[in-house]
Image (cartoon, rainbow, N blue to C red; front, side, top):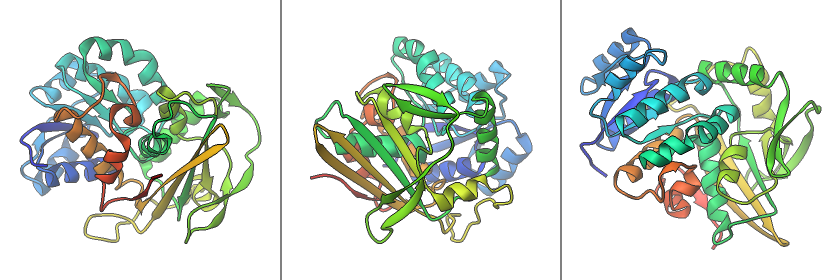
Length: 343
């Protein structure tokens, strides 16, 4: 879809932010690059001369207002989102434009629904948190698998990652979340988020071939525990992670992702496998692709395109599955994503 709409990317020079700016350019959007570091923004503009540079800091509301002036929407790619999401969404609401972010932080996403829903509803603006690999993709798969169901007994999302080389931003966000939880773990059970000190447990998950049966860290809780129950009646939402990827993330010496192609993607592959159960009936949906950071770009840019062309289902704060036609959205991501949905 070609468009002359201009989208601000806050946190544009980060690992994921660069993928998002590149995808906006590929899709024909104008891009304003923003963030704290003016020097890095200018370096990006030297590489991509058509982008507009507007430095801004989250503790300077005036600079955020100037960065968003005249834009059609803003995509926040700057973690930790516990720090950035509130100021940037408030600036978006002042500017009267939609806000999307790529937050994987459970608490930051929960705070978006808790703290900004009323203001976004009154402004009649779409606000879409977690429009990314974690939180957004799982929510879309769950919603598509549910089909006409509005409720289920249980949802499980299993992440089959070949490995996980975390970016510096991922590590910082993880540290912030760990601090906020006091080192505890979190799960969604009995219809609510609960914190606990249980030991990490392992199990197995049978992914579609060729991945097959793999060892997973059970209840390796990701942002799906916020996005899915935000609009579906599900008392139990569990997410699991292959042990290799969990080990990579935990390892202090695991290097950052390394680009192996002209698009800057790593050689990491993933399978996201969803199971929903209701009344003894099970439905599954699966997505396969490459590079969990790179895939976030087509996810969030497809979302902003739909918001700006009147294909959003609601306004206010809503997750991907509530905001969009989930099955149609997922199919539109080809060739970035290979999707298998229930018939």
